Length: 401
Image (cartoon, rainbow, N blue to C red):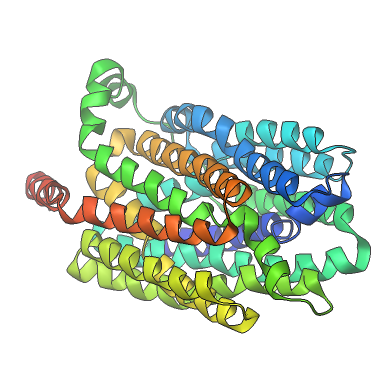
């Protein structure tokens, strides 16, 4: 079937793209230190802003790219994102100051959207009854890349230096774009009648049922990304042995190992019991995993906590993406995924700023507790919002078999 063929092609391209981007995640704060920032407080602040910078511009441009995908097709938007991000990432390997890295991350956000367009393309060709399984499987491609990327990145950073890793990352993004260019069918633009129906105030009325999903996506990402900028610093506080870069990569990638297990399983359960229930369960359990991470003084406990977190993270974004697919009309589906991606990037922007600011002003351990509270608050919001399931049921009753 066409949706299965598309799934494995996009799985491969997402794996390559995320593996490339993940090469640089473990050592980005260490790279900032190499660029001349040496005070721990300043490293925390620069890390937060540089992590968040890409999301600042991505928040603005994601809805635009989603609207253009509805009009011109999703494939061209995938290629735009892959090639543009590849060039910007290569340039990051040649910066001499943190502010230059910050600027390039801002520009990189303009081109972002490779993953969101992949999800939108896959969702558009997948039947509803297989959506959780398909998008959960697609998520494993990203997680496999995030698993292998930090490990390879840590090894390469130690062997050849940080700058060469940026060049390799850009090359991998170009490779992912080539996979899409060669193997993915060109998406046909929507017919003029469908375009007209998606314009103006009517478009916003179509999006209204999706607002709780967009909010949940943003809050989820705030919770997940608040830890990211300080994770390698926290690892440095707990681990005092050799090969710090490798251990930092392992701490990041162990979450991906568990996600490979949790994502397809929770995706299938979501198809059976409903994505809202799986999402609430995943948020609560993910929040609980931050307790041992915050209390530990042992690197092994941190690794176990990150692994448990990865098991439950697998139920979050795939569930949210399936909700977008089920709630959004076909003619504005790419735009809906663009807005959901914008919400995700908004969370990606707020989360690192929150985490780095809290760790700089108070203590690094407070970041874990605040993250846990954010995830619990999101779970409560979804628990008391039963309209999502009612809207999906009403929409499915109106859809002809």
